[in-house]
Length: 520
Image (cartoon, rainbow, N blue to C red):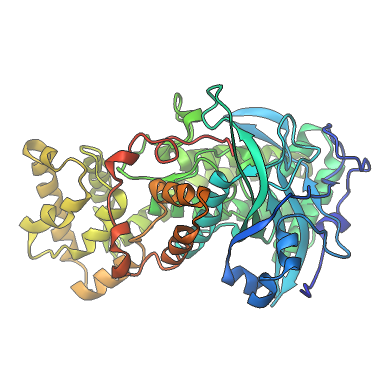
């Protein structure tokens, strides 16, 4: 392999002067040098051809020992110095102090075709930020991250990417549900790729330490490499930078709401400065449309990060980022003005997104009521979000009475759709049909455009769990099948119709399908 190494993070930013790999509090440094742990018997499970190409690696090279050793941490690339980033964060609403890359190690930065990528390994060993953990990851969580990050990209959602999935050959002890019953699982490593893995917490840690000097160095670095169009550092530039971060994160969360994705653990250390979906832990897709649903068992009591509150949590996290940037700006009014626009910006983008899902390409005042009514009705009986919105384009406004029939496959309990609930659906379809009559597009064009925003295939938790269970037995074919299926989520792919189905009953309460934890 002949990668075009272009390291900047560990060359332009202050590093931790202590080189030993021991747990410690790190001050006035953006990272600590660390060497990945060697594995006993590495084995490559799957590679993303797209990301190979993005990095300038050929398929032949990906089959070689050099590639395997790189993506499992067994070899450090020449002229590179791997490192773990230092950051803090608010976890479930509370300041958690120093966190950092506890099981992620950044190998290097690569430039190819005018795009810069950071190559990071998740699960490659302990770092100074591992706290009481071992820095490793298991096959279960690694399969989920690998498949989901690539699936999200093809859904059109801003996200980090995945290059490879590999077994370490080591056994890793994990307590899946934190119930005092740990067990050994297969160790695995995911190679993650992004322009940068900088998070809100990278900036928060220096503000918390009242270290304005290092904070400024990091913010200036961020603007130089990722927001260079904003110009040279100044208070105005910092405000413009914050405004862009706000807009990027609004776009991200609107996409989440569009496809029914629930992140599960939206702590500030899991929020990308580029507005990318990052850290795929206890995530999930809505099965039944439910604003109150979260897949994360850790959050089951208070449901802070439930589907319906994700936009509010993004705003809350942005307030914390604003507080972190305040020492560089030294006046609150500009930051407050930007945050004050969040709700309006989000609402406009959300309403436009929902119009697109409903095939409404012109704006009318009554659209918001139509959308709100639909959201309420979807909660009356368990209704599969993906199947409902993918079926809706088949509705013809000239055949109002057929509305419920067209979406019936989305109902988990069809017998409940009677009486009052049936009347509410009929009334909604009548209103919806009237609204569609105001559109100038044909039925065919509307359906085509709706199918481009309403995916047919998403990575339902039970699908990932089936792939995990097969992989645990040494069968990786389902990982490949799902990987290829999810590259074309908006296409019919009739040969894969079995995946266009509601969650099976066996998965309703199964660990890994409806109950997930941060244990990985």
